[in-house]
Image 1 (cartoon, rainbow, N blue to C red):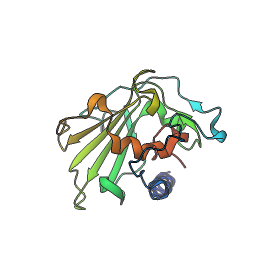
Image 2: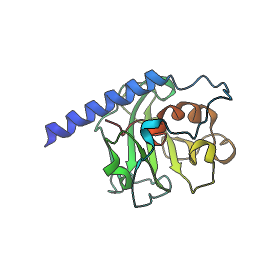
Image 3: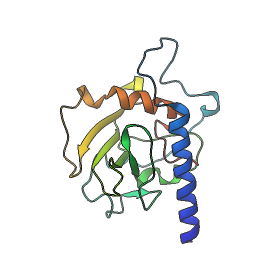
Length: 183
């Protein structure tokens, strides 16, 4: 079982990296012809989870049982995050591997960042799915940057709407803006 878990984690990690590379995390420009909320044709009937997520950062995420990671170690990353390990709220665990899904309110993704390659956490970035109508143009996701202790860094953009995050994650529309849990 341990071999299979690590094989799945390696495959998911590779898929995530290819997704980031393929989508290029956006150029920050506006394209009036794009509809950020539109799902590709193959995503007309997305899988969903019944249970709401915890709705925010939890200091004990790695040991609480309320979160899971697809990798035991940091994964070599590209872009602004350095090497990463992503934790997801367990309410979406059954959606891992689905080509198309929508996360319910409260779903939380906690991305540990190793910015200097020393295999130690330097910071976090957080995504939380808010209630319908929070930011419908961007699938109602809230984004936040945190220091290594989980404290907010700097002044957050209004309402957790960080343009760089949004531009990148729009490339994962089939999986409700979450890159990592697809197989």
